[in-house]
Image (tube, rainbow, N blue to C red):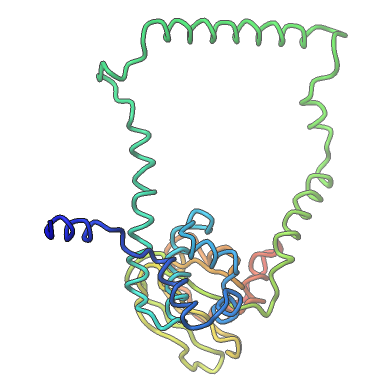
Length: 274
């Protein structure tokens, strides 16, 4: 009987990363808003982490990186929390390939029945006939309204540009030029040096995947030196912005203040280098 109880105890689910973070936060008497202020991570992302809803975050890297930062503020083991998050993400990532491979050619038990195949063929034929009739009517001279394509073609360049400009403005409007800049490593062993305009080193190391570094707000004209600008995700006040580059290249003395990063991607092609 005791052996059965021990086996049941061993099979009980362990505390998730989000549950651990919430528990310790409550034990320390901190609110989610106070954590957001300390980490500069939006409260909606912190709520998602505590609830284990990692799909609400921009990407897997953000889930791990934000969890590391959250754990650091609470004084927890960052690596332990990051490993828990990776473990929780793994089943969700593995579920997609499993679904795609659920139908395997050559498996008689998974081959559609003959009746279903005939029904599918008939439905496809009906759709083809209907589509042919529709286009035949639309191609007749003087019959029906003008093609919809003509309406789209009549929209001139300035109108399209105005719509796109409004969308970009809406996205960047919420990001301020004095916001908190953070770099999150997308791969293991990525070397980087962060320093200010006087050459004073802010941080230099080989960062682990998911590891996050916040540029000190008081740093004057902060800069980066790395050979893997493509291996860093960048956020300003928790909002993702484009990478410095999409492929490997040596970048040195590139200004990475919030203002400079926004200028790089404001559509004007401005690049702040020194």
